[in-house]
Image (cartoon, rainbow over all chains, first blue to last red; front, side, top):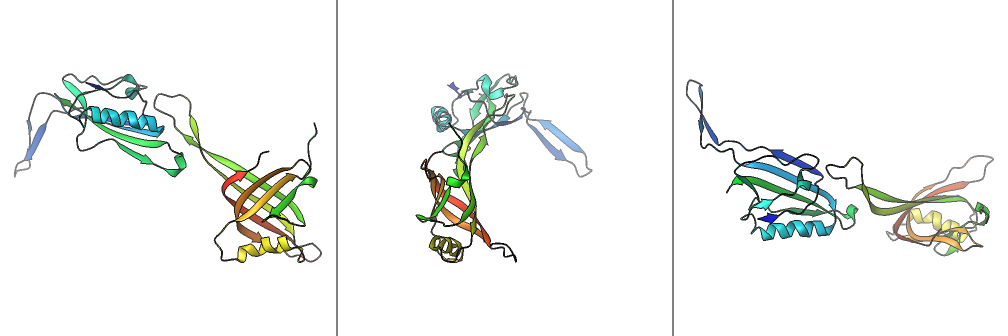
Length: 125
Length: 131
């Protein structure tokens, strides 16, 4: 378990987990839905950290590398969820998404500070 | 301690005093970049880039080299900046020196009035000097 840095994001987008369902439609127009499991999975959260010092990026990058690029579970500190509380996700663990590493952008207006975006997904592990 | 007046001020262009400068101003500003995070009740900022611009009103004196040089610089095709020195007070030696681009020259001509040209500067790079 890797501890994600305790940095409050500038913005956050969260979507709750969902039970995998496949949907088919008959020739008559009737829709059929079939559950593909019993556990709601794949909650997601997008975090944006604006105008942060370079040290914050280094901490996030270190967490990414320490997690083996998404192979190890993450513990998200309360700061990530402020001013609210962390969602209750029984059976799920937060991880980086392997093909979506954290991203850093620099802007000349920010005099060395950086903007960082992070994508995380809660999966059953 | 006393305050100073503008009578001791001086505008220098490429090291030479502009003979008849009526007034000048130098505006220095710095951006404020918001870094407020979720959960904050108050906005927070960090300092961003500094920039400066200036303006001056110069009475047209065709015999003054600095005046002519300054006014003609707007017509030059050169892309290089000029050296402009804003002297707050010659006695106290208080001055701000910077490289600047001349971005505007206005030449209003009215019967019965002196020809006073308005000049705008855009400072490029740092300003040397203190208040």
